[in-house]
Length: 109
Image (cartoon, rainbow, N blue to C red; front, side, top):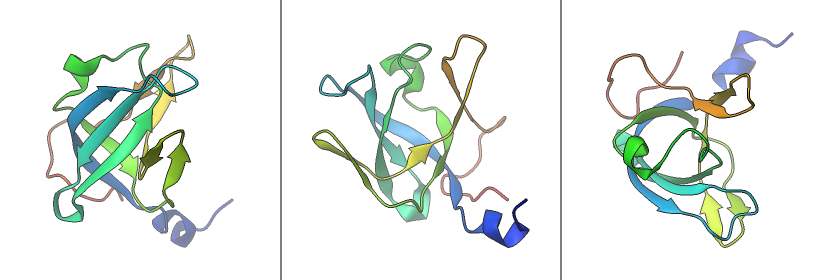
């Protein structure tokens, strides 16, 4: 069991995907994404979500991401945030998204 204060240390925010690029250098199929987090600015992320998503259906999508993990080197790319998703029954990642649009940068509680 974790304490609620432990949970509050994980900073999960809403952002809107504003740029999507192929990531051919990745070991597994992935995208390089730029995400607008409002007052926190734009952050980059790499995501292995090519099974269910493409460039067109990702652009403009609001997502949830952990924004306070240290940056992570993925090949030649630095990923600054961890997008959140849930595997479906085929093991494909389904993004965690807000049900309705909210302001970029809003924190999950």
